Amino acid sequence: MTIDFKKMDGLVPAIVQDAQTKNVLMLGFMNEEAYQKTVETGKVTFWSRSRKALWTKGETSGNFLNVVEILNDCDNDTLLIKANPVGPVCHTGADTCWNEQNTMNPLLFLSDLSDFIEKRHKEMPEGSYTTSLFRDGLNRMAQKVGEEALELVIEATNGTNERLIYEGSDMLYHLIVLLTSKGLRIEDMAKELMERHNPGWKKH
Image (cartoon, rainbow, N blue to C red; front, top):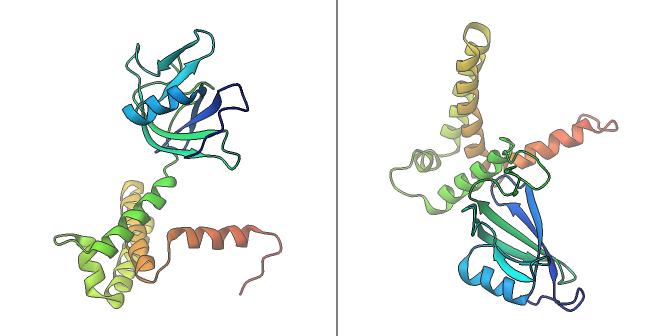
């Protein structure tokens, strides 16, 4: 990775993002030594402009930032560091330096689940229920979606909200399996809904 440390007198901004929640946690600065230490240790290390010294985030509090991935921007002078935080990030005790809660939008898990099911489809590990669905074929997968949809309807009309969520989750999982078998993803349906939300959309 080529990083231009010359533009800001030896420093580059380093934006830290939670690798799981995708929330921005903090902004710090790195010189070349801080970057190298970050790469070597796997823990985010900055250059403190006030103390004129390296500091590894969490070295005092224990709230380290464990590196998952480091990306360089198009001008090679700003880093995006995806990390898993250990505890609050801000020195005030807040989750982020903007005093936001670092919680995950559950909808993001649908993409992670799609990734996981795609991995199952590729590797087909023994003993996996998902593998068995793929091996049973398209008709069986489609049938399962229908069965789960019927159970969802039953719970919606005669059941509890808890069971409605449970059966709806079953249906959504089997739908993602079916989509995966067709080379599609749940995001494709989200895009379709986005298009329908456009005032100019017309039914096919």
